[in-house]
Image 1 (cartoon, chains in turn orange, purple, cyan, yellow):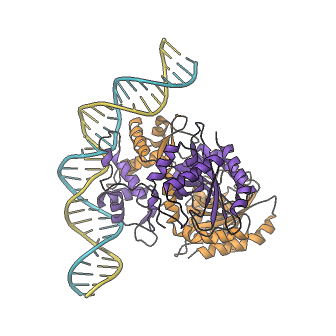
Image 2 (image 1 turned 120 degrees about the vertical axis):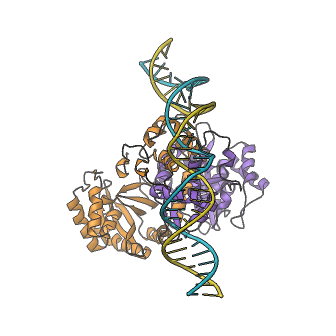
Image 3 (image 1 turned 45 degrees about the vertical axis):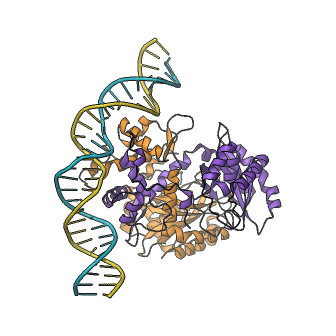
Length: 269
Length: 269
DNA sequence: GTGTATCGTATCGCTTGACGATACATGTGC
DNA sequence: GCACATGTATCGTCAAGCGATACGATACAC
């Protein structure tokens, strides 16, 4: 399940070339991060050479950085001895990121309450330009696949939370995000035409929530609403996802939409 | 809720002093990681000076590293303008860490199935010496507090999963971990005496699962079982947690223990 | 007001530590 | 057997990270 389309693809130039004139830029630090980022979109252990290529450094640098990151518990050898994998200490940073995020802090109790009312999947996702990242996930009975992981990202333009966020942005800004997205269809129903997407966004703006059917996953219906910061800008979204085998869109909307909108506004400030 | 007792507290020496003789060690990379790690156990934004102190570098180095990490999306300014916070890109690394972990890969479908049967909280935690780290969490109806975050860590010696893991280790190794743990009581019922803990561990070894009551959280009962790798070593644990207001220990054990043990063995290899 | 803390940012020589080429032991697959 | 991977180890060079210092804001004390 390659997700590379969701990430900025660095140019072909050497790492940090664009920072050549920045006197505060620390190249080694950036290289270390590049090594960790080498695993994005990859589906197994990576060898030194692969890491070097992905991070755009030479094998020697990769060797040194991998060694360093290994002693720090951020990388480990794969169990079968072939290549390297991310290690547990990385989870500590993610944990800091989540627990220190004021939105996550405020959202958690509200989401737990919401989860108690609707017995469907409840998620919080954080806005990151062309994508939204799942920060907390609360499963329903169902769920088959393993997209249940925290840190998973989906495109802003076709997710319910993303559409709700776009609706809360100035029109021009929202359109810019849609247009610079890759818009590769994830299902046959994924809407990829910017004009149509913007129509849906306008509708979401009118309603106060976004309804999305099967644009990310076949058989899934989702409703999302934006969470705003004190300046009124959207920074995250609550969404609830259900199965079309159990819900008609009308029934789902009638039951879920008010609760999602209320939760989002309770978290906003 | 300070969790510092769970982490290695670096000495007072300058960072990397112990690596002085290591020709492969990259100091800048380590410093960058130290800056990110400065947020462990802290409960709000950090200023440059605070980061510098926590990472044992001077303010100039902190300035450069924060600047670099900021341009890479790993740090951001706090919304109120006072200090810095971890930023979203950190979640990408955690996501890689989880999705590439073979144990997590194998565990997820089993845990979802388990969650469907027992309507209580189901967690997977990964073994990291004196602590275990929650990798995936599946909530129950209840849940009040916000310890629901991925990346959260609890001491090995007093968690159900941790005890099950200790039981799967050689006796001496298990005892060593218990003895080098801090063993600060988390509740009045937390058992801190190594000998008593080892008795419980022996019992867990006999039963094939570990039962723990209120040693981490008042009112909580949990049963954990160890997951082993191909070499037979414990690397993770499944656990199910319920409320003592709804279960007697006997009923909980009778209903849950077989399912947890079965799930753990299905994931092991 | 004024003084004194911080805060984050900017600049600049010095020299140390990261750099990359190279060599090596080992293992895997034609 | 050869060819080509893998991860690891060594070493001289010089750029890049270092840390001291200065700066404009902002906040709080009195």
